[in-house]
Image 1 (cartoon, rainbow, N blue to C red):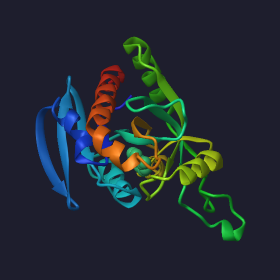
Image 2 (cartoon, rainbow, N blue to C red):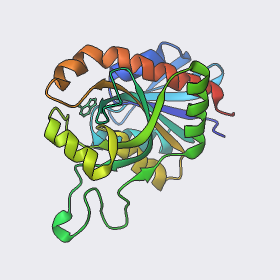
Image 3 (cartoon, rainbow, N blue to C red):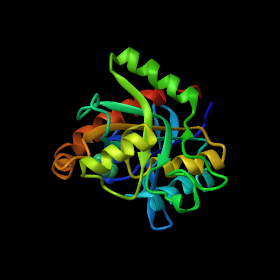
Length: 232
Ligand code: ADE
C-alpha cells in the first residue's frame, strides 16, 4: 500500500505521543508550521499538527500530500461524544465525515451540503479493516460511525443533539471533514481516529482539559499499531 504515511493531529498534545516513538526525526518548517519527518519501525512517516479548526486542517493535509508526497493520511486525536455508548477514553473511527456548520439551507440544500460536494465523505475501507484487526488483537472496543466536524467547540447539549440527529453522527470534532475533503479530492486513502475527551455538554470544557492528554495518548498508541499493520 503506502510508502510514506502522513500522521496528523490538530494540537501539540495529539502528536507528542507519536513524536516520542519516532526514529531519525528531522524538522521542516513550511507555511508557518513544523513537519516532522522520521520513521516508525522502519516505515517512513511525516507527522504534523495543524492547529485547531477546518481551515488550518485543510492547509496541513494539503501540504502533507502535495509537498511531502505522503500517499496515505492517518489522523489521530480527541473528540466529543454524541452517542451515549461513547465514554471518555473510548475509540471511534469515522466511516464518514460531514461538516455540521456548513449551511446553505436558505437555497433548499440539506445541512452540510454544497453543490458538487457530498454531505458525508467516506473514509478508506482498507484502513478501517486494518483498524478492526488491530482492535481485535488488542481486545479494544472500536466504534465506527459518522464524525461531524465544525469550527465550534461544542459544549451544549442542544447543539450536540441537533448534530447527532441531523447527521446521524456519533462524535464531533473540528478537523476531520477537512482532511476528508482534501484526501478525497487528491485520491489519497485516509483514516480518522478519535478517542473521546468529553461529551460535548456543559462540562465539556472542563473534561477536555482534564482528558486531552490521556485520550490523545490512547489514540496515538492505536495509530502506531496500525502503522505496523499497513503493508509497505
Ligand atoms: N474535540 C473534543 N471535544 C470537542 C468538542 N466538545 N467540540 C468540538 N471539538 C471537540
